[in-house]
Amino acid sequence: MRLTFLGTDSEDGHCPTLYKTDRDTIVVQGYKVIDPEAMGDVRDLAENETLVEVPRELLRFADEGE
Image (cartoon, rainbow, N blue to C red; front, side, top):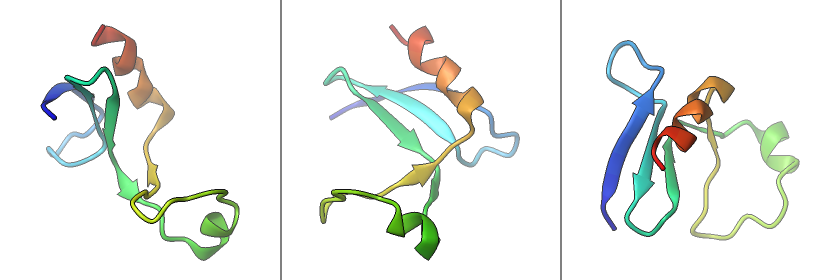
């Protein structure tokens, strides 16, 4: 898989960041969700999956990458 940078709201070069892939998917770099209460609300999380939290504003870059 190859990633193409789409955008970030970060001012210091760290996450959150959005990428598109050469497989026509989106990859999100964000803060790993570890809060036990939030994790208790999650359904069907596979062993190879995780949750990340990003600002809603970051999603504006998703359509720009088309």
